Every structure is written in structure tokens, then in C-alpha cells.
Amino acid sequence: MATLPVEYLRTTRLFRERVGDVEIISFEVPVHKYFSRNEIPYLATALEADPRKLENMLSDMRYGRVAVEKLWAYRLDGDLIRESKKVLLPDLAANREVDGEVDELEDAKILKIHVAGVRELVRIFVRRQQGYREVVVYRKPPHPALIRYVAFL
View 1 (cartoon, rainbow, N blue to C red):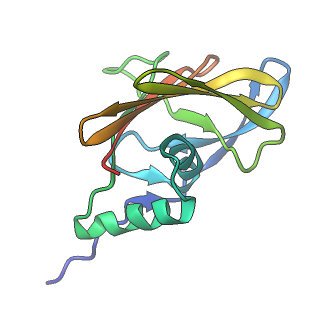
View 2 (cartoon, rainbow, N blue to C red):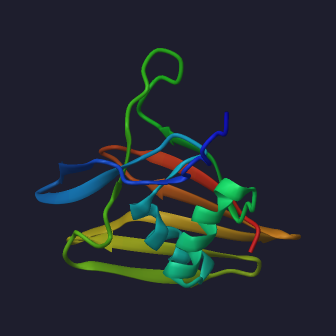
């Protein structure tokens, strides 16, 4: 019996949430291994890659070609053992007023993303290592989270 290849790129649910006085649209991030389609703009921006090319690379992973690996996504205000809360990131395409800044460092860069007037709601740290790049996405409270990727591009 033949097995079907695993789809690593998935469509996840959207949520409306309040951050201060503003309502934003966020999406659920899979905990590890799988990617939400809404994560592609984050990764494409951090890795300075074409979003369509990156989406094709993630789709090709079902054949064993690993380009980007998600190590974990963890919600900082939850208890890892007892409860698993959903990791949420703002949807960059669905929200209005998305802006950002870039800080260049010697061997890394920090992207600060402002969503709907909330300054630095998301920070993306990109660090070059030998043979790969490490990407860490940090989301500020009210739903703080960390997501870690390794990109072999």
C-alpha cells in the first residue's frame, strides 16, 4: 500500500484578538514541523527570499528536500506540561497598517514589525551561522510567544 506524501504547508484558523485598544487578526502557528501559509511572509522577509519560491521549497519538503525547518513554537504564558495554549501571530496580509524597521548588526539583524499602531508587536531575529541561518520570532504580550526556525538557504 502506497503512502501519500505529507503536506508541510497548511491553512490554519484565523482569530480576532485585542491588543490594547486595537483589534487585530492573528493566525494559529503549528507547534513544530508544519507551517501555516501565513508564516511565509514572515520567513520571506527575514530570509530576504521570494515568497513564491519559499512556498515551493516548503511544499517540496514532502519529498525530502529540507529548506527551512521549524524547531518549535512555544507560548510563553502557558505551562508546557499542563496546558498547551495556541501560538498566535498577526496576519501581515489581513491587518491594516503594517510597518517595520530593520536594525543591522555585525552578524545578525533584527526586524521590528508594527501592526495597526502597536509598535514592535513582533520582533524577528536573524543570525547567520556557518551553512544556515537561525530565525527567532518573538511576539510581545498579551500572548507572548517564541518561534524558532533553521533555514538552509
